[in-house]
Length: 438
Image (cartoon, rainbow, N blue to C red; front, side):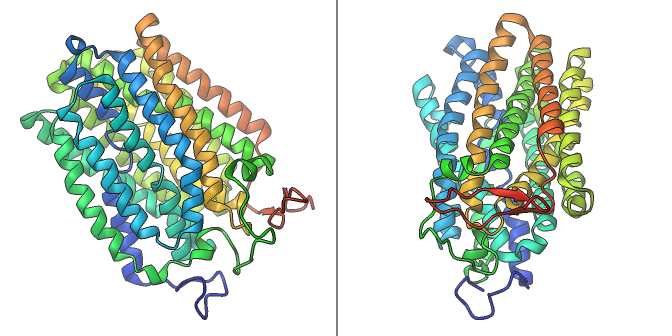
């Protein structure tokens, strides 16, 4: 039921079984597409290209940083686009094709600048997925069921990552690292079919942008993403914390993959990193579902503190042994930290923007800060590895997570029950207050 349809004037939604199954299938199949090559990019460039073609940890990290910066620049415009468009399905399909084609070009190129350009295109297209999937979900189920449904989305996303990584790891043993490209192409086609399962008529475009009861923006138009961020101090604080989390987290799996390449040889690197991904994703599935089911009862803040604490512990534990099996075991902790973050990120942003009509542009603004942290993480870790070794890099990433834990504990409020003020106008500047502070 769309935003202008009769009967769509309340937040209560009764989505069809087809729409809900479509969301399940979409999150499952997009899991391997939405992040492009991810950690496989570093494995491919180191194992296949190697030092003979000028590729080491630092140059690989630089490519990932360039792609990350391109993606983060696109985050806020992507969120604004999703807020405004009524063609969300078509945009998701176009983004899936763009990411896939950009990555499929990689085996045919080796020039640093061309590799960086193709991965930048993938990063820009990938910026579409987080706000689009959250908006489509909110538009289908409404705010009352949003936290629970996001947890289910993340569960299917992690299950999809686990299955695709298992397939990549198993088949890479026989066919080499090139197999990840074949798998991405297959899943991209499947994701298009899954997106078409969700009827366009069931996506309420007003609910999808965070308007309750179809409140209209009194200002007549949306402010920029930067303005939406700056007008809400708690949203701005959450953006900083998101950047800190990803500055610590983003490079950990990549760095472990590089270390495994050195320890176990390039022939086994893709399979070992696949084992790391599968192990973590298998943990993320129940974690995400639990967080979605219990976030309203427990609250967002205590659960988010667990994510920061586990991330710091994970970085420290990586330094205790170089045994590949031990490293894979430590990687299980990624399932807790990243599982919590993925399930709570859109919920907290929805808390902070409810009723303003700026849910997706705010997602984009916060994701820009998040992407900045992630893009800097790869270069930071790569440089530390080259000049001081893997142990120093892991300890540095762990220390960043510890800082994030302390900052969240002291400065960030509980957002359950958060009540933003009326949508800000250019004249008043708006703002937001916690329930009981007004």
